[in-house]
Image (cartoon, rainbow over all chains, first blue to last red; front, side):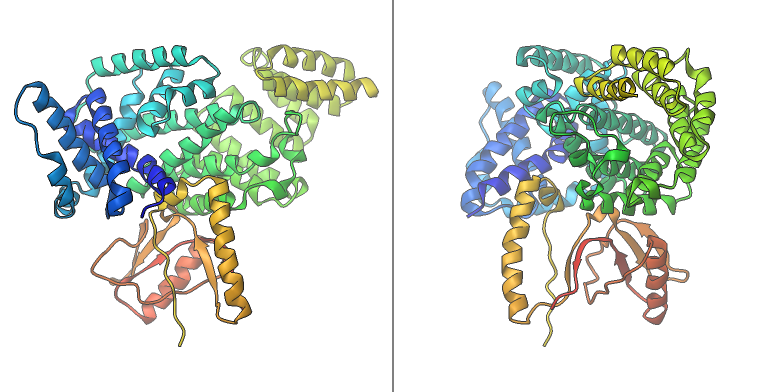
Length: 412
Length: 120
């Protein structure tokens, strides 16, 4: 007797590894997907009676491979494999398969499957949709809901992305260390995109919250395969520490609650504990990178019991480090927030003035500028900045937040 | 006689639980534990964070080797455990090294806990 909910979770969590091994075997996404589907159907009929196999991933790869080969043979009118009899004594065969597919293979297989979704010709939204469909196994309907488009539009988008990926040749040889590093970099960028897609609009639709969970699940899987990669630890920590705040980020009417005003007792403690532990682990490597620095910033926020306890000087230093690693006006803007806390609104305003041109179309630039001007008592200029911010707001929640500032200004 | 129960499961599956499923499981366990506490049978217990947060100290060499990840060798068996209250992974590893000098050979897996109960 095996619990159906358990089987469902086992199939979902086995999917990335099983799919990637099947892809290596068949070198064709559609055949691999079909094989995995077949294996899942067999699992749903076999596992409840026989109990789950010792290694669900190996079982699914073995059964999926056989049913796909069987399908090919049937089509070419050869004799079919005696599937069902094979399944009955699968235990011994399963052991063989496990021995052949060792961790090193899984590792490069999963990385390859994720890397295929990051094809540089695919726009970011297609990369994300493809990864969610192929690697995570979300349904087209689920993905469409997350992106707020119709199911048929999403179906088309995924089909087009698949065609493009199939035309591109990704090597199935064991990657070199340099290839592996390159693939990891592309994949971590894509995973962070998935996370951000979910994070930026978490208050707007439930469908998007799934994206954060998926990004965390896939990053955790990748880290379990590449255990000594400090940037992967950093990325997972960053996601967990940001995701921990979700229950406190939105008011009941959907308006944004900024970090300073959030009820910190609502932050998810297990996520924070895991994130802080990963930052600790990553730092020991003495090989800092952008994700680790961003995670360290998130960790300083997570460690502060109240906004007043925040180590703003530490945060400013970390943003300065991040600026040196990847100079960008957005990072300078973030450093300015820390500067406003340590050196005051005027110092922060001086820091962001040169950003007016590069960030002219950036919501948060005008929001912060309005805020700093408001703190300095320059209400008229503040109002103008807030008006610009509202015009650039990407979500209703962002606009509502700025409107609340404007209301306060009118009261003065 | 005191017994330790060591909990094993597929963390990918447990990690895929929704918050509701996780809460429901913790509530079912809580009911069993409450009964054990009333009867004075329950000692310290806790829940570990995923193996991605684990660090392993191989103490069969000098200096000992620190490896990212959980204990993964099958020819050694779990023989005991410690619960530490420390400020950082570095501090935990320093203690593990001191214990390792007193008892060389094999290794220690050092893993943070998400929940800890001292027991009744």
